[in-house]
Length: 110
Length: 112
Image 1 (spheres, rainbow over the protein chains, first blue to last red):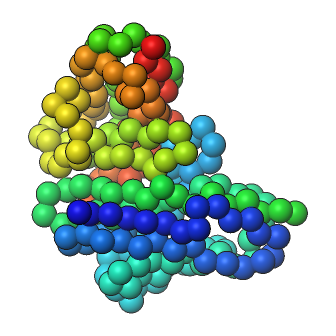
Image 2: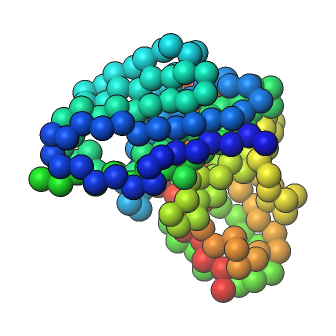
Image 3: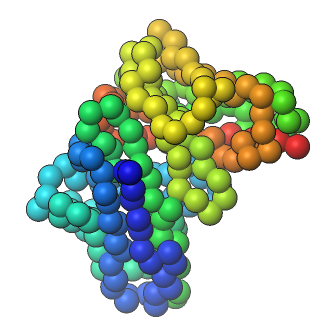
């Protein structure tokens, strides 16, 4: 069964304390791996798309990487405004189907 | 450039009723996907429409149905509402089915 698992469920960091979020996926075939940020009461906001193992994408303090089994979202020197829920989603090959993880709730303390 | 919009913002229905939710895709986007998001959970994929045809479907029963119009806006219809259908319903549009999705603010459905 296609599955996406994110860890940890919740993470509290001090401002400036770097860390990584994990997204493990088991799907019949991967067309793409997506990262989104979701603020309370809002729809998810697109961050990155990764299509093949070894690929990396960067944006400000965020960097996403992809292997054949998992993806990481690295947060360098986070700020309080980075506090949000971070979601990853796998798009399966064949019939289009998006599988989202349950997210990591990140809180960055000033 | 107008983003993805959804209507209504909030909706209260009773068990057994039917509901229609609406979504206007971002300009230039021909693909719309619908998701159900329960509190504290990730979005669950309901289905995707590409150029007015269903292009993919998640594990939802047939009472969840949809439609995409020639202008690429979309509707989600849910028949015979159940209490467990209470959730945030999200619509997302993309340039093509495999591209990144841009989400609307969602419709909060409460079933009593």
